Image 1 (tube, rainbow, N blue to C red):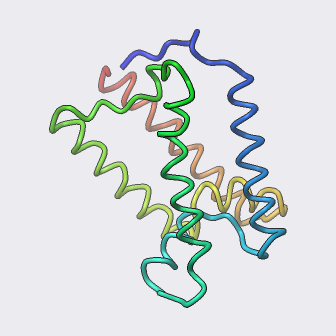
Image 2: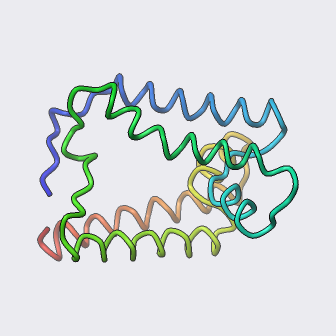
Length: 150
């Protein structure tokens, strides 16, 4: 897949970053919880605590935000479209999801928990985790784009 550099706008990236930061701040200030998506999902599925309504609402908001964005924006840039019309794409999508879930468990948190909330609290553990995420991402892109020839 070729990414169209012209479709990137710093304003949409800035708006997205501000909205993510605002959501994390509101969750922390409102109910004192860290916006770590893997932890929110894990507790909702595994713990079944009585106070799980906010977790469900948070995850539904994450899921519905993409279709809402697509409904409001005339055309989605090619870099953000999922091409799941063939079995190979589905396999890659599933393996990638499992790898992210496994990595989140190994790192005791995900990119949102460590990268957004942990770094904002000056957590050394989060800094190490984010450096690991970013290094893994850089190597993954290099492998797929340059060594595998995609």
